[in-house]
Image (cartoon, rainbow, N blue to C red):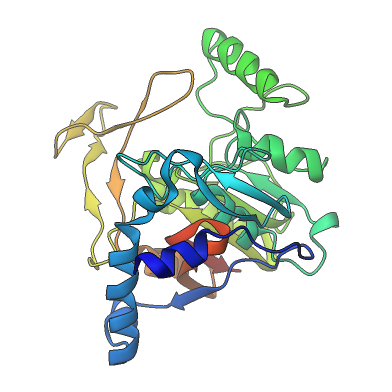
Length: 298
């Protein structure tokens, strides 16, 4: 196993711009579970390899090639307690493994250079990277009271963002029907109490054939979504499980309402998407180790 990891640690040879990462795609938990014996053995081996990545990378990081930058890089990783989803950031585009995998899947369009793209974030490294390559890309933030707007605007400009922050509610978007080619929503949906309304809005705003790319906390062995908190009719939050606060660079944290299961696929179809699948990316040469991303087609 260590010899295999050592082979993957070798810097990738110079190459043309990389295609989106290869993924395994599944339309249901049953399909995921009913894999051939060889596939199940491969998954078990991959799980064991994941446990060794931090030690194999060491202080120098994990050598590979960023599929977005098309550069040989050392992906940053904490050897003692590696997070293969939220670390492995490229030093050039600054995007973590989760964001790199999702962004590549979102940009798998016939003509990405002219695509109408919307991210449900704006004061982030991901949006700033997208804006630098697609000047017409649209983004937004939510809850921009004057003090928050000032702080987030400063952070956005610190990252290299251009223009003023825009406020949008993903459950009531201001786009015309069929206006967009692609929507990316990365670890946002779990913070939306009425997430089905957001999915319906995403479907409404996408053209036929357009794509939605989502990352969320995902329970790969569970059909059902876990509801951690809910918004009552009086506007108060009712906690069903101990509060889970997700990090935010400026505001100090955001409450997580859901850990999603495979039933999120059915929710996407009910919202108006003709197809929805969970994709799992395994590309050690790109610093991607089994990341889950949902892709839904309009």
